[in-house]
Amino acid sequence: MPDKNMPDKNMPEYNLLDELKWRGLIHQCTDEDGLAKILATGPQAVYIGFDPTADSLHVGSMMQLMMLRRFQQAGHRPIALVGGATGMIGDPSGKSEERNLLSADQLQKNITGVAAQMRQFLHFHDDEQDHDGNQQSNGAVLLNNFEWMSGYSYLEFLRDVGKSFPVGAMMGKESVRSRLDSEAGLSYTEFSYMLLQAYDFVHLSREHGCLIQAGGSDQWGNITAGIDLGRRMLGRQLFGITAPLLTTSDGRKMGKTESGAIWLDPARTSPYQFYQYWRNVDDADVMRCIAYLTEIQRVEYEELAEATQADPGRRVAQNRLAEWLTEFVHGEDGLVNALRASKMLFGGEIGVQSDASLGEIFADVPSREVSREKLDGEGYWIVEALQDAGLVASGGEGRRAVKGGGVYVNNIRANDEKQCLDVSNLASATVMVLRKGKKNYALLRFV
Image 1 (cartoon, rainbow, N blue to C red):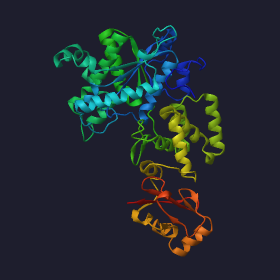
Image 2 (cartoon, rainbow, N blue to C red; image 1 turned 120 degrees about the vertical axis):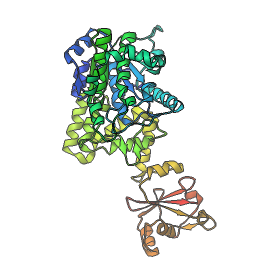
Image 3 (cartoon, helix red, strand yellow; image 1 turned 135 degrees about the horizontal axis):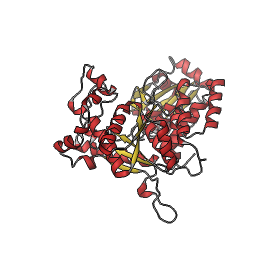
Image 4 (cartoon, rainbow, N blue to C red; image 1 turned 60 degrees about the horizontal axis):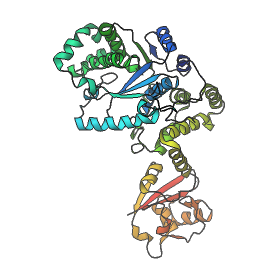
C-alpha cells in the first residue's frame, strides 16, 4: 500500500481526468475541455474547503481528502482550506435547517483537530523537501479563511464584493431555493455564506494562483458563484469540478450508524468500529466505495468486481475495502488491532483487554451484572455463570453443554462441569466473556 504521507512516486503516470472518470468521481464540471487544457500546461493549484463543524473529520470528508490527494499525486498543488470564517456561519447547502453557531473557542479547537488530520492524507509544503533541501512545488498548503476575512469590515466587504454579486443569481441557486421554500426558511446570515465562499475562490486565485475549486456535488452552487465572482472581479477564467456525495445505492448518506457518524479520529470511532463499518458495506455499494475512497488500481478493481459477482458470500471486496481503508486511516497497528478484535467474535483468543475494548467489540452481545463477590472463596460455578448470563435455562442444560464441549470462557473451551471461575478468568478488569456454541455470546460484568 502507498505511504499515506507521501505522494506515490512509483505510480505510473496517468491522465488525471481519465482516472477520475473511471472511478466515477466527476459529477459536474464547469468546462471539462478547458480544465483538461490547463491541467496539461503544468502543475495547478486546486482547493477544497472544509467547514470545522467538529474537531474531527468524518467518512464523508474522505471523498474530498482523497480528491486533493489524487491531484497531488498527479503533480498538482492542493490547498486545503479550513473555514475559520465561514464556519462561524455554516453552509446552508444540503441542510434543512440552520446550524447552531459555534463559540470562538470551540471553533478553534475544531480547526486544530481538522488541520492535524489533513496532514495524514496530504504532504504539506512546509514539511516537503527534495534531496537538496529545496521545497517541492506540489506540496499542499493549509489555509484558514479567517486570516483574510477577519480584517474586512462589513462596509468594505459590501463595497468590494457585494457589488459584484447579483441577487438574482444567488436566488437561482438550488441551495438557496430549497431553503426558502422550506418551513425552516433561510436567515440572512446563511444567505451571505455564498458570498464568503465565492470570495475565498477569488482570494486564492489572486494570492495563490488557484484556478480550480473542487468539492462535493452539494457545493455546485457555491463553486459556480465563485467562478462568476472571479470573472467579475479579476477578469479571470476559473474552473469547478464536483464529485458525487458518498451515498448508498438507495440514496442515504454513508458514514452514519445508529450510534452516530463514522469519524476519522480513533478516539471517536475506534479502528475496530471503522473496520467493521466497511466490512459490512452492502454488495450494491462496495465497488463504488473502492473506486471513490481507495487507490486500488483498475485491474484489481475489476478482479474484485468479478469475485463479488461470482460469489457475494465470500465478501472479498468488502474485506479488501475494510483492510485498505483501516490501514490508510489508522496505520498498520490500527489494522492489526481491528483484525484481532474481529477474530474474537469468531472464537479467536481474547487475551487481556480493557473493559472499554470488550464493550466495544461485543457491543451487541447481551450483558448481565453480577456481584464480584461470586469470584471470591471457592469461586463461581461455571454452570451458575451460564444461567446468570442467560445462555442456559437450567443447571442440567448447563452441565450437558459443558460436557458436550460447547462452552467457552473468554473463547477458551471449558472441559469440566465442576469448574469454578475466579478473578484469573476475567478478560478485563470487570468483564468475563462466555460463549455457548459457535455464536451465542454473553458478557458478565462483575460489580
